[in-house]
Length: 302
Image 1 (cartoon, one colour):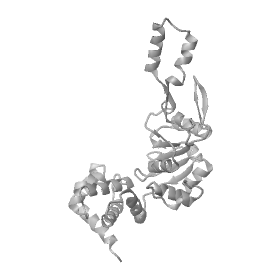
Image 2 (cartoon, rainbow, N blue to C red; image 1 turned 60 degrees about the vertical axis):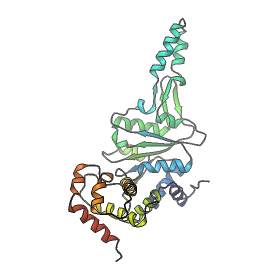
Image 3 (cartoon, rainbow, N blue to C red; image 1 turned 90 degrees about the vertical axis):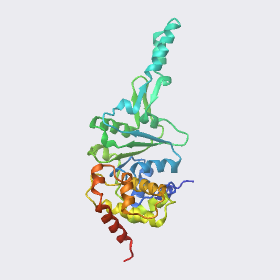
Image 4 (tube, rainbow, N blue to C red; image 1 turned 135 degrees about the horizontal axis):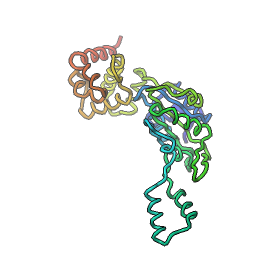
């Protein structure tokens, strides 16, 4: 049985799902579960914010419901839509059958049979396994009106559908919001949540993560990969590689049967860790060798 009665229990549960977190993050996740408060996670892309929700859902055996935010997202798209094509078929069928009472037909058209539930409404529904995990991902991509709507929805854990009335969650979902901080999220929403900044891990923590996620990688190669990425993050790059890129790169190197890093191997696989051409161009030639030499030197015993 999953033990979430302590911070250590939460850390172990996440670790069992391949998510390695420090004490500070384990503490805020524990408090979020204990107090039933939404958890707001900020940090650079690729540091593992979304993975926390996935690990929690797997560890608690709960359904994961993901609302992927984007520019222009509005309340109706996040809550529900009516299945308009199916409604039109139903109307034509009723007309072909000789008509139907308009009030009865209207009731049928705006019933659960024609309702398309979007993530926020899905999260308000009862579930036999317990309250689901509601992941509101990359909230910073939306705008202020959606934040205001979300503030109300998360305060009361209910949504209103004009044709059906107000739907209240029998048990509040476990809510995790993430932001890459491309813009500031309003303080009113942050105050409703527990907050944590998810930073890049240090060398030891990233080694633990890579060992958990890519256990087939040899220790020597893993150490070189982590050391190189750690030094790469100190460079003046448009987008520094996150933990996700470290994991992807290690998998790519394994697929190529690489035993140790070399400038040639790095040049061939830069697309796994850097996603902008300007950043890749900076590492051509002697730059990759310089960073690799620094990384290998840092691994040598003092």
